[in-house]
Image (cartoon, rainbow, N blue to C red):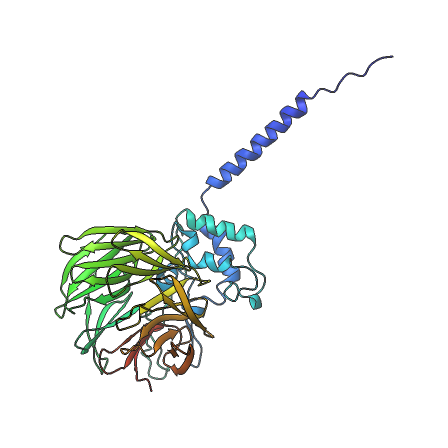
Length: 450
């Protein structure tokens, strides 16, 4: 009987290997291919985002429709100016608010697009956006919507408001006679209590995020920079407002500044670092690393040997400045944390308050690393301060409302409608208890709590 010859496996094996090599090469080539924004990313934004996040529009009656959440995505300028430049951070997809929101789990209240606008983005779409941001968020030749709302010169037309960038930080001078505000329009000094604009100060940074007076009131630190490029801290004399020193070591925008004393300043950045500066020499003393995403706020405890920070990584962290080590990491927040503040007065166990996108106001004892209590609000609180006597917490919120919170009862005791739209910043007058609140479209207002 004739035996059958074994099949020749060489051809199929070599064919299989060839196919694998071809697929591998294709995947490798695809992973290295540059994303074309206008062909691959822009259609996603146009179809799923622009309906809610486009430039302000004015209807025939003169009513203004603003982008949802004060986030504009239909122009490069709008993206860079929205939410302190954190919507898209070139090279840092995990720190970019756009990518964070489109990858939240289904059912999360912060997911974008929201459920009423349709299904979530596909994994392929989110991966594409991740790679585009990771590769540097190159927009190519696209600029987007360049239209602006300007005052009308025609007498028979209703007045039309100029859209201004939001007020990102506020601070009173120590004598209480001036309040300083910062935004992407620059550094502005207002008279108190009239809030008449006194002067605009030229600064080196294109985007300003935070400001703070030194403990003696003679210096003003201003933090900002250029997204994904460099962070800039500029020190001014007060009240002359003359530039004394410019500090440049951060690799992304500076989001927070805090004074240890008249000669040492801390700065925090989207580059995930916290730097302590010797202002006599303009050189770093310490470089604290530990946040996995951008740092959002800072405050020193009373002993000045411990520094507390918050971040986009949802954490509240305590640093021992004697050793330069991270001593506590508290992770109860479930979304990015915006701000924190130390309760006034000396206490054996100091108390801080933090606020975040998870719509919570949380109270901590940072020296022992414990969250004491928390209150949940209906909207996200964006900034927080204590009244001078430490009896109440004041939070500015995404609906333009000021909420007064009792830290002992952990209850909202008063709600004060203040601004139209998002209220990004607030501060309390050093003696009269008045609150100044700042928000979108350059709004700034005095509020007197009950």
